[in-house]
Image (cartoon, rainbow, N blue to C red; front, top):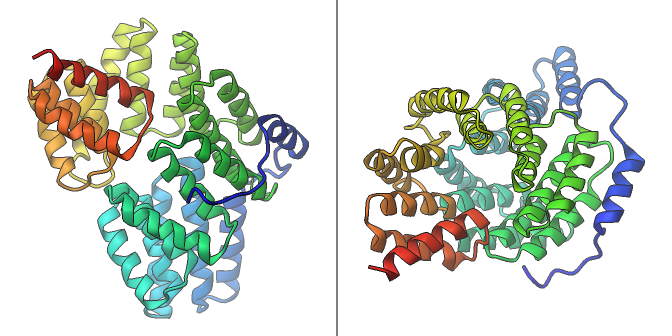
Length: 386
């Protein structure tokens, strides 16, 4: 994918573009407006299966806007109705794949996406779903092939650019990832406020990986102008504040994120921030609550197992529990972030030789995440000094 060439916006141009467009002056979000339009269409033509597909799509987009996974449940209901009206219809099956990915059921999503790809070999978004599922499961070679198909089928399309950017980041080409995300932003309609805010948060994340803290802060300020209280922006802005040593501010941002998106992984990040801010009693309470919530969902695909591994290894000092969770998760997926957590659990159990072999797999992909690299260095030193 490194052969792609295109003109992109500079950071200054991005900021000017956001300032010029501003937030949409309508009360409802783009996804909410789509939901309302689909519901109106269903009321007018209740036997029209395409309207249920549109409703499912709108609800899935609303799930990303809000981080409220109950929207995926509602999307599944709409998909079931569409399939009742038109059994096996292709668009409903595509939406089912999208929802499975949103619920982190990557194995089932991959199986369905493969079947759809055989049925219609040139559908762009099916290749996107294949890219997502393969990447989340750790099969990066197949993910790259699927993403390249997207780029070849329709050069310059936004879904391919954002997926290619993610893969470039994993492969260690952070500047290439930034170039692609800027191109995606440039092509996103000003009316798609949440989409633009999401792309900006990804650009901020990449700036943080590259060590450009001020740039990340500036981009996130613009994202929050588009979508105030945006949970993705709060997460990355908290990372900025931590890098600046402003730990109380980071904790406040993550409190706001957890209030809006009360998921166990978000609670873990909040607990760590509270601990860094010196709010020990609150941090301990948050850790206790996190453990209970994370264990409750640990056997499902949509889980906080990676955070649970780090909790047991770094905070609870229960390395055996960390390894137990890591072994359960690595049996299902072997993406770089799961491998990183597995390696850390092995290291915590004084199995640093095995940990280094797993971390070498991570580094072999090319990942440049500073936290992962720091753990890799610790594991490397442990094996060198034995």
